[in-house]
Image (cartoon, rainbow, N blue to C red; front, side, top):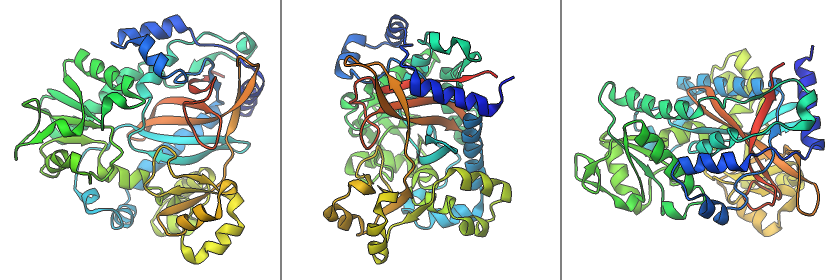
Length: 424
């Protein structure tokens, strides 16, 4: 009988030693084609979108990540936490809404002591692409002597994603029919994850909901309704990285949301409550958690998984410079690893810019690695795990394999990878 610890060791050994090729490319292409995509064009423009291998994770690690995600829902529900976070957020984040916010993405690194939370995102991309990838996996011969493999939350992921959007609608509009969804991003056809927009459009249409993929400039506000091509938009699936709806292009959408004329998800309040990286300083501070009224049980979960994080201030500049190798510096409102710097790679010039404010420093948690096959031989790539979550529950787990300082889709052998665990 394998213990949870044994399963974690098996998973780690397979990741480090087995460069297995598990993707059934014919099955993957068929799934993408069924979603209405031009597969050749998608993969030609994004040759490193998908890795050819899967990632193994022990059940104990998955359980701890799920516990952290459930704990965050309890934290966000605390009046003291909401007051503290929202009082420093832009005014628009305080606009009341019953919607939770779709597609939270919890990003983890795996270390010797288990998972560590790196950040939370409110418009995490890749969920539907990873659901299709998970269905196109073949068994690894090397893993056949291990306990049976199971996909992590992969069964019926599309149905869960669809249910998430209909639940967001129900929370705000009750039994009113949901007729039309706009999937909104700036210049959507040029976005790296544009294929996923089309997959979602097809998913909504198959469920009897009209859907379109639009640039925010195509939307109009007539004082009562948000319109696209003269038709009323009921719900916006927001893929924008303008989290506070400040740019001129999104003003019609902003006006409609503030007038409660459209259901927007995810929305500015969700970003303030979950994804503002300054929150990580609260979540890793024992005294702050106690002051907020967090229970001992939840504090234990958070402090074991959230790395020590502090807000950067110029007054502590010299200390940060001396200790920079132990910190990873990130903009509080950043996304996609933009303007994020590992301390040991910093120049003095960039460091001085960071000291101007708007950054957090997070204790470095090195990512684990996955061995992959490559045209020049086997190579080890870094990996991080993303749990797509809603209402405190994991909908799907996926991995991203990469080389370099932060995740990217430019590494041969890298990209999205399916996550598998063991049944016991």
